[in-house]
Image (cartoon, rainbow over all chains, first blue to last red):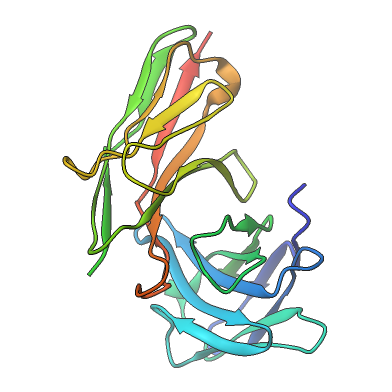
Length: 114
Length: 114
């Protein structure tokens, strides 16, 4: 158990809909990262937050947004969903804004868009 | 930009065989290098890391040496077990002066037969 929790574990929705994925980092970790894992694209970094502020952006679509709250949990919002958004979404946390520290990954949310 | 290239899988071995999974990278400066492992149905977890040239990371019988001259960080294990069956990801990240965006390889699936 990494100490990172993600909800829900599975999510099935339709095209055009909007969903919210939630992540609680390990106790004491200030940095949260979001990743998308799909068979054809591999593991793609989406975005990083550090202590409530956006720190780095990767391959995140404009339809996607994220935020980190004062209690350090984070939410990833996916809107106008398309079939291609079906993937595993991972959250990871670390205890520093510097990404060369170890990241602790949650179990993931499997999103299926029908 | 930064990139990580791993050998394509799956790698299929018999129990007690020797394992090598190749990883090479492209990055400016002096990145830190990591191997993460993903067991079926779980998130990624750090297996080992090395933060400077000639460092050797090791854990659970796995080893990898940071070779700056060949820009490589190959993963090795002398005798694999069925329980080592998983997907292995090579990754790099750059500290001060770097982009702070972590870069992962596409992953190499390892299947170990009894």
